[in-house]
Length: 344
Ligand code: UT7
Image (cartoon, rainbow, N blue to C red):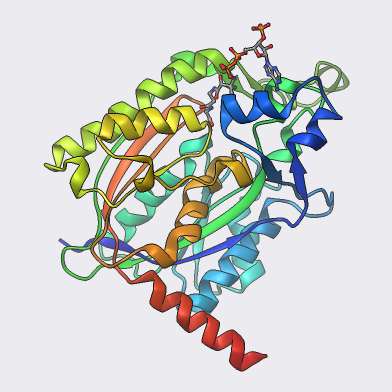
């Protein structure tokens, strides 16, 4: 069977930083609480009102194309995982298609909150495995600051903005996405939600007054389910594929809370050295967390490394994917550096 492998990674992070100290001046919180309860020290925010999720997704997509050394017209499909699309429709994928000039591509958005990237990655992989497409771009992008109430200390300390993209292509033998456990359960949808703006509560003066266009989270409820759910699926995908902690090079977890990530690592039988963790710098960027980790760790990744990607998010949605990394990241970084030196 043809498998799909990640063959390149691109990213974009806004320059502006929102630190815990900044938040101390905005709401009744403190650096110590935020760091010990979540692991977050700062996040990046795209304050510019004229720039939305597609702006970040296009930047990430262009970096990806540069690194892979291909033109946008070679892309067959664009999938954008996001809960903060520029607008309800058209899909942000269409804006990215036009923005990068992917003249042959079709695409659509995937809404699965913090599991969005994982679900999009698995959707994209099926297009490659079926033989229908050769180059599928999967982007996780969220401008969370556009749906955050910066007077609500329960949520405003948690989230940040960012985007990252991967390319899926047919994998060399034995590499690529091998197995996944993916789940959703809508019974507890109310624990993490944005009520306003959809067909149930179209925008009115009343929905605005009731602050329904912001994220609401019952933190403790979500924490309990997430800590169990993410560890369960990671353990299940390992067990199904006969993997022990020693076989795993990295856990690539959704970055919502360092304590949830630690619990998943313990369940997998791995130490924190084998965990990609950048929550302290970016906070929870929803669909972007996992590909941003892949970007940050790309240089350390070697062909043949076993990775487990795991996520849990609103819906609830959750899942884990086992893949064998298909290229030496250090070579890509060296090439990019050489190219930048030539351009300079
Ligand atoms: O990414 C999608 C999925 N989301 C998640 O996985 C998030 C899951 N949940 C969590 O990560 C945690 O529940 C939070 C980080 C959101 C909260 O941590 P917690 O340890 O569960 O705290 P809590 O909600 O139980 O609140 C403890 C106390 C409360 O005060 P009382 O009621 O004990 O007096 C809160 O009001 O901390 C208070 N609190 C804060 N204090 C200072 C809540 N937010 C803050 C804050 N600063 N920002």
